[in-house]
Image (cartoon, rainbow, N blue to C red; front, side, top):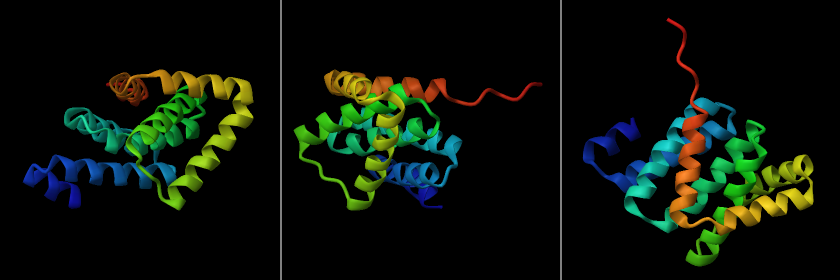
Length: 150
């Protein structure tokens, strides 16, 4: 309903917020395919708007989503990309979001080992803003479900 209303008004920033919130709820409730779709659409709007302030939380939720799918490499890289954007924009995060991020990062550190995790975070930190969005969208599109057989 809310998404339909923001689409009808053409409010891209409102659509991005609604899509992002739907992605968060879907990711954290384990409904990963809708989460992927919502997050991809949200990131496309972030790219169109060119707003770095909107990006770090999207990268972090992509990290949560990738970690939930046991895709540790893109998860760690997205956390690195989020870190550098947060540092340059001064964007803060809610305690609840920090708790979810920290939980996912603990799991990644356990799966990857500290050295590999830090290496991947550094890779993510080295991405330009545009490259991080392109990488995120590529990963999201690669993980689209296959169409059902005819």
